[in-house]
Length: 266
Image (cartoon, rainbow, N blue to C red; front, side, top):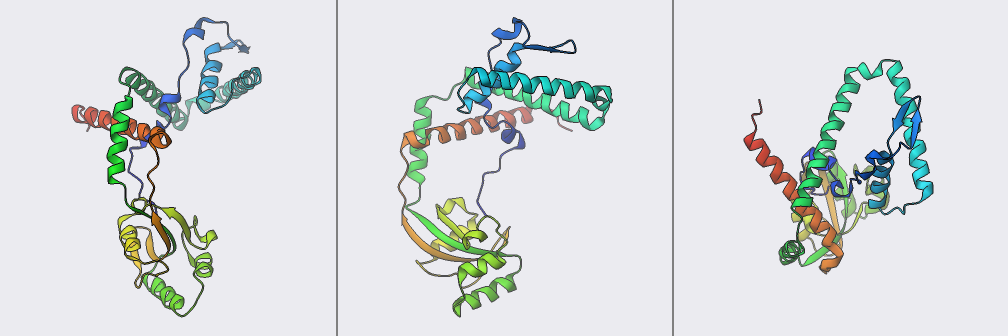
């Protein structure tokens, strides 16, 4: 239902890329453990701790101990898998190769944004641009999604005869995210929805139902506008992290596009 921007799969894999990474200083430190003679380096634990800290978890000796135990368990299992020859499986080899590419991509973009940080001024300029384009209103709606137009028309007829919208939504809607709430989509900006849905919603008056079903790539919608109100644009500080992430994603997309343009892809 939501109109999400199409992002290359690599960008999805790189979510949180800037939060990753740990110091290389521990590489020369003694290993945290040896498992059947195989050393587990100190910087492996440091990396896991750094990633946890980036997610807002407080570092503690208990955390380090838990990560150490996790790495020991992983090494034990990996050794057993190797004994069984699973490391020679084509599927396993492919997964390892894919992970290697993702790790290298993460490293590339960490380095890129370290060398080319997005300034506060650029983030503010993008915020002001989006603020100027923000809609005046946001809407609270309900909808019922079905696969066939005929069924949607039948539902509209039932609703006009007095049937309960919430009851029909709970029984028949294909939208698993809203049917449990009687089809409620809560407060949203029209731009969050795919265009046909958004345009139909903006034409409705409070309490009004669509006279005809609205077709999108998801199926056929019956929409009722519950309420509308003036949209209050969030402050810069409230949305700064999201704006920064959008700019980072744009930069990543441009880098990938430029690389594709120069590459020989057959």
